[in-house]
Length: 310
Picture 1: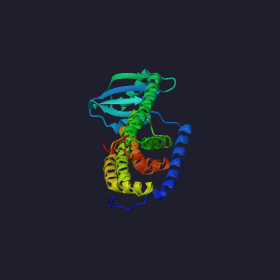
Picture 2: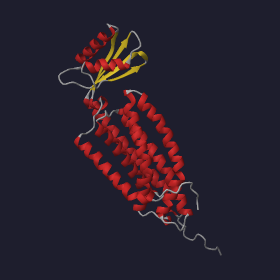
Picture 3: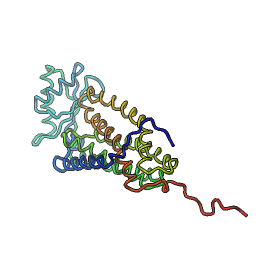
Picture 4: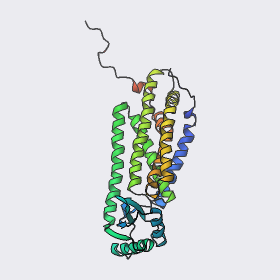
């Protein structure tokens, strides 16, 4: 029997963990229906303004000046050089992009005593934003469908593919729910983070499933909960080290990365924490609920195999 340094009985609380996940999913879906998502201008449309300063720009000061001028949701970032700044603004009823850009330029010139010049102004219509939103949703669905097929082929039994997809859907819903509850801007960087979470969580689940399949064949007399406990304990150190080192980097980005990548870092932090949890209590739990046994993983004996030839 394979040895594991830890002997934590994860499956003993699988029903409580499942109940917790259902509560979190209901809260997340309820918030999405009631509050929706605070979509960024990548999805809603808006005005993109590029400004060049005579000196390297202080992005924090630019954000403060714009917030005082009524543009509190402006997205500010450097482009090309420290003197070039890209400002993205949500649309305002009754004002076109020309009026918005003139207001912004005047605020920035007052801040720098005339040391700012307009380089370009672009308007992203809401139709483009809707197209990006729809394509992002399709990308997530296609990723989940491809994962379902891949895991099914790799592990032979359909229960593994269903378990892995349930875990990923669980991760995505809860991560998006956090953004809905907290009313944090949801833009393309957050969508990219969610796609990254799908890949990260799947990798963690596949590693556990590989060990589960191996132990099902080695631990012939053990019941499925015991096999799953042994497999999870064997991979626990690897999982904690991988997730822990990744989270260290992400917390650094979350704290010191600034407003531009805050949503991206937060989505990854939430996704990795929830993904590590779901690999244990959703994906593995699904195998028990779907009745996967060692007989399902035994190689199919071909007809006539083992018969003596005359």
